[in-house]
Image (cartoon, rainbow, N blue to C red; front, side, top):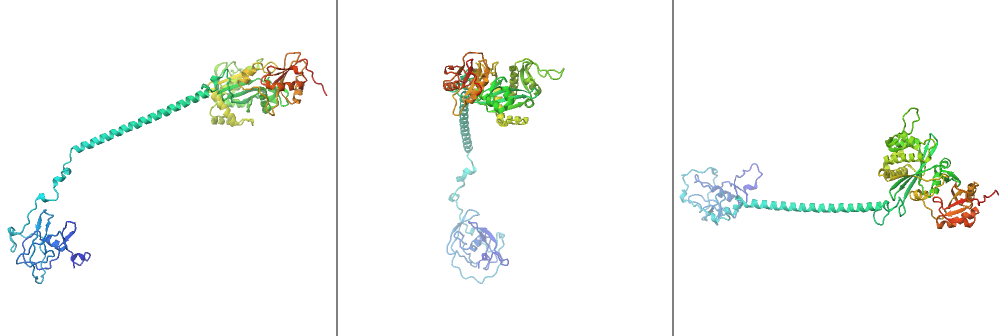
Length: 563
């Protein structure tokens, strides 16, 4: 049994590794089973021969040299043929000679293992070195390869570093060029985008400003009137002076088409129709009919749509001015303090800074014997100063209105009021804002120029044919000298017409029924029949304001008697 079959037996003598073959496998020393001569000559290759014999069949194993005469033969499984194998120690090959037929060896006697050290020269029984069979040294040219074939490994070419550096330089330069091209393309794209946005913004501005061909705006209108239909947002504000018990009324107009804001001041003496159609003044209508009735009466008089009413009592105006940290306006008079010996609350001059208390005093101040228009203009100046300091942001404006905690009309909630004031504040900040006074005559009727300068241009009021279900509006001017305006009002209301207002006129002999638009001619004829006037009294003229038909009573008008 082979020694290698017991690798894990601790009691079995393990063989000694004496070397490795060309495949990296270990070569073990075989135990000596034959009688060894007492003395042998030193052979440096004896261990290798024994290891190869113990390893089994190896086509590349070395053959044992021929048995010397006088020594017992040893078993050689490879003895029938000889081979030449390379030596891995010296690179030489040894030629093994075929051995003669061996005789049976005597009984094996256990001999001491060969000493690992080399036997000294001159040991008896060993052949001299000159008689040994030494294989010839293989010439270096017969090897499978030579070291000079791999000289490039030991001796690197100096030009290789230059080639690598040149490749790196070329690659980095190509990358830089590509990066420069990419940045150039990005700059061109960004420039094109900026130019497109600039052109679009310029076109949009020209279109919104009315400077673009085919559009309407401030540049295409004369005296503030645009050629096309305009959109307006109008609210009425009533300033209630709780100390003196008076009121001041103004319209805040936001023309979204022309981007213009206007405060229209309405004198309390203007004649409007009350809820029953009777003629009354604006001041009395605010007290008697309230915000809803007055709003409707103003709309009928001016022919415009009013979206809501803002009741502003003097304490709330004071809080509003304080919330915007005071206002700066030009004042036209000194306003004295109520306390004796105190400095005036307001000084006359330009760019006067007013706090809440001073602003209320200036807005409601009217000197003795002074016209009402003066006090209205001061009220308008205070409103303009407030709008210039008011926030143009709807959300911030809503917060400001909510902090006032005032009681508002249901027609104008806090959010809607704040939005309207924010838009007006935007116009006031850039100077696109003005204040106008509604022209009213001594009798309370609108003057001849009122319909052009204020009603049509600012408010957009106009005379149109009554729509389905709309009652025609009729005004009366009494020139009969009989105080017949009230009797005519009752007759017109009973006849199904809306009585807008009445005023006095110069005394005249014949009555007239005037219409301004041909579409109102049929209405004028019906009004004449209702009042009992002849058809010859109907004629085309210029009615008051935006009224469909205006009746001017003369001495020929017969006041109907009681039935």
